[in-house]
Length: 201
Image 1 (cartoon, rainbow, N blue to C red):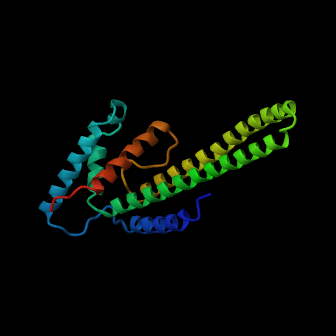
Image 2: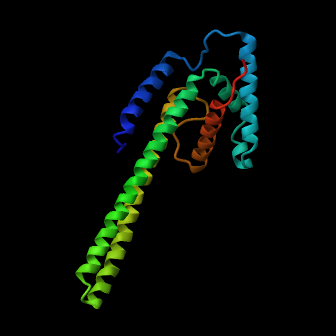
Image 3: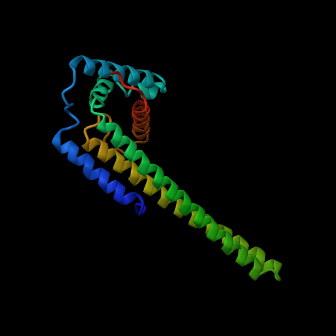
């Protein structure tokens, strides 16, 4: 389940992105001076190529010139940068929420352990036996709890993939392949870094 802080923002961003995508706004750019557009395109492509060259070879080979060129062209519409920033904000809030949930879970278990020790403080044999059972049960419960957190994060990744694919951003599509997900994470990092750069004017 998406946290209460995230869901309204996610819904707003999703509808906003799909609206733009349906209008084809990511395939067109408002009328600008052709020479300026060309400068921006060259700048974006050059930066993307430089960033791609920093990656390990197994990722570089998955980022051909055609993909980087299409991505640079897509980024001429700066709305894409706003999409990426919004998605990363949601991701950050979600991760913080899940982290707090895990801390709360561990705190509850710590209190239960203290209560257990207090209950059997007069009987060492029973205390050891109860503590061993508690530790085994806690390990199982923590494993199950962590699996739920992983599923939440997997769902968040899928949401990002679908939104960016619907927005027409090259390189993004639904996948569960770990290598492809890692590649998309690198692309997200590229887009975030580009959004912080001064564009040619």
